Length: 392
Image (cartoon, rainbow, N blue to C red; front, side, top):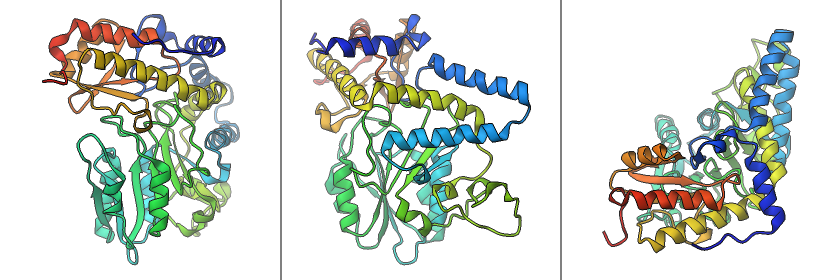
């Protein structure tokens, strides 16, 4: 089995990071694509919220202040300004607010893809009643080539909205190429980074992104109930969402029932009272990620993915995920004869993975090690009847 070569400081960094996650005392956790493992600082954040509730009853000033800390922390992670970031309950709520603000008269087309999560397709399809022309860039097998977007993004396109890493096979799109294409044709680019954010650098300025959405519960290692939407500052005042609420107003505490005055920042895409418990859980999670460093995390995750792919190839297993590092994220997916049975069998062995589209999903993070990869490969050896081989 190929070794994962690292500087000793990096090995020590992984060891220290991993110790923050008690689940590794008993399990091999390889399901960050569904939910990140629970870290001690995240648990402490939840406890801090509960104690504030017990002690002060309704300390909303402190709670809202904590959300502003979270906004700033996420902005720093993506090289944005805090006023370019909306803190929402979910990617669905962020996208619905954005969709309600789009006009579909001059540029009616919204392009998404076969590789996007169903939420994205559903939200844009719901805009058809308002005049949206929704087009899906078509995948070619387990790949989504740039040509699929070149064929669908035209002069009538308002928005190209697609995923960074596909949730069902791990394919990673070239964001810079998508930005160049969209802007060349007068469209905005929206990237859903839910399956990549937290495992690699994401500099929204360098990538020339217009809009980015992601959530905290997967590789950002936070809790359900928090998501983020970045919008480039000069675009914000072009959008006036009809899906609104009091936290999207210029002065949240004005309590002005009779006037709608949008915030001048990305906060205009927020709606109701913030998800305070999730905010308290997620801030320490982002601080953990920032402390480790996204460059360091990416190098580690890519090395582990290569180790897993090479091990699968040596066994002749059929993969859904591209082998080329530039075309894959933190997911590696193995074709199965019975994915549900395989996931259950691995769980009995203490190895926690997930499944999509009849394949085994193995997702890797900074807290995983070469031993974790070897453990899942050894488990696949014990269940040869449940996996497909390339020759099958």
